[in-house]
Amino acid sequence: MNIEDVKFDHQGLVSAIVQDAASKEVLTLAYMNKESLAKSVDTRETWFFSRSRQELWHKGETSGHTQRIIDIRYDCDKDALLVLVEPSGPACHTGSYTCFSESLLNDNTVVKKDRYAILNELEEIISKREAEMPEGAYTTYLFEKGVDKILKKVGEEAGEVIIAAKNRDPEELKWEVADLLYHILVLLREQKLPIDEVLAVLEERHKA
Image (cartoon, rainbow, N blue to C red; front, side):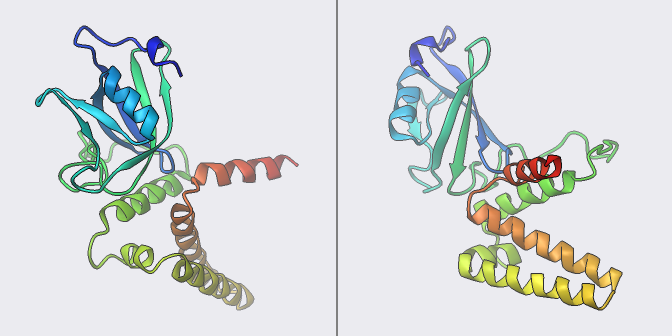
């Protein structure tokens, strides 16, 4: 990407939508000027321009919650940026994984058409847990213990699936498969591998 191609507004700014590259969750909306965009490209970490303080700021400089840049894309008009990142903690100053945590539609009237949307939702929740690390949460415990513990749980749950299937216990099998899928999603997050890429491979195998 050539920075000179970006169309900055009359204040010399361009909006930057920051998205978790793995979970696809939108983390925040910030602004960049030419200097902060150049720093972001050079350092591969997000730098923004604060409109209130009128100065550059490096995301995570004080909190340690930096955002490693995976890619920066611009839209067809070249006046907005999409910054794909690997966050090392919450994006929001409130300590929340994303700044967009509240909904105007809390009446549950939205019907989900994708029966497998729960996988994406669960991936987002796991990403949120990894960023915020809430005390007492089981997912927090897994991330704190690291990949060896996560792999052990994947192995244990796989064994439980085998036992439930051998016992021809469909009710137990449902729960064990669900537990296995959950731990696999935690493993994918630990490995920074989006579920979309796994599903794409599954789709290709289905076509074969």
